Image (cartoon, rainbow, N blue to C red; front, side):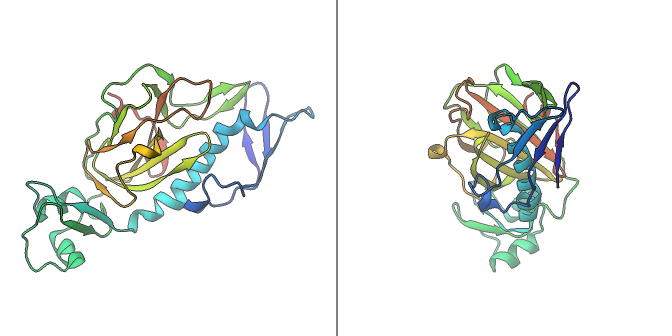
Length: 259
């Protein structure tokens, strides 16, 4: 299978098979190395010019084969002050009966700090309206906007928006959701993928892995602390946060997260 990169001035052909990636393979050195040529020439383009493109292709595979496939995996919610089964069930798209069955509950009395298992979150209310908020308190200048852009004469996709922010900026959940992936990816650094209601998913990077305050499978409320921003993957780039929003695994403008 060939991956074709269109350009208005020149086309770029990447000769590399695209394999469905398992989550543990993301960032693996076992991925085949691509050989890239400019049409009509024998010039080889350095791999660094395409690292963002390839990383985005890997991210897409991850979201298809990893995040969306993992939506049937259980989530775990830690009971907080004022919680009751009805509120938890309504928030995560299940029923009170589902929660009782999943947790073998004989009583509706909950204890603060109690772990509640949520099977198939969001499957009963796919039309639930999502309330978005900024993942960082204050957004800076837009360093790279959503949509295609040119790099070294090659048309590259930008599936999210990069906004400047100081390194170490606190990052929070942009909406209620479930952590589905945390890991390193070339071109992104450490990223987190969060499943949200109504077939939405958000992607945030680069984060400092040392500061990560959540785990895969953890059920989140909007505004929950995730961690802090880490160094940008490119040495010559100022610190930023990559904000990506997907609907049915298709990248859409992340404007609702940046208002």
